[in-house]
Length: 200
Image (cartoon, rainbow, N blue to C red; front, side, top):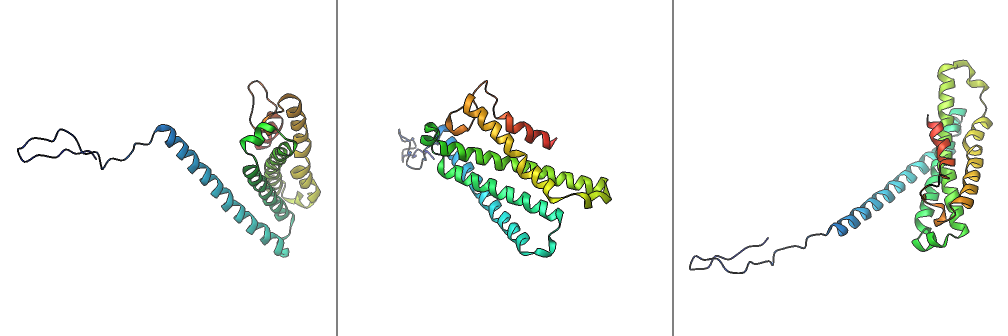
């Protein structure tokens, strides 16, 4: 607060007192602060998610009595989420601006692993949807479903998709550890397209 002193003769002091004022945050500082808060919230969210997923994983591991195809599919979905979160933490801890610019092999492998596990999340959700659809629409056909079918959907189908994406990145967009997009280069749609397709 700025204030002026009223003198004994009834006039105001010429100079205001600025001692109670606080510095106004510049827009750049505000933007940086908001970004840092968003990063902390994102990190905390991933930590809480990881703890909850690990609790669920160990419950499925310990309770053998609940092991049926439906729960095995769900357990694999949880595992895919755990692996995606784990690779997210690896990306956050290892990918500095210097590493991005150097484009070393290990950082490209980390990015490929992250995208693979990100894809498996969607394909395991698709597997869950297929199982539920079969259980509701074709009620007496669930006994014909086999675990290997869902393992192929969840873990195997994303692998050649990510290999094709990695080859595309290697030849058309081989920079910055394969993170981000360059204008006019659409290699990321090689793995994002199938994920969108299984959502539809």
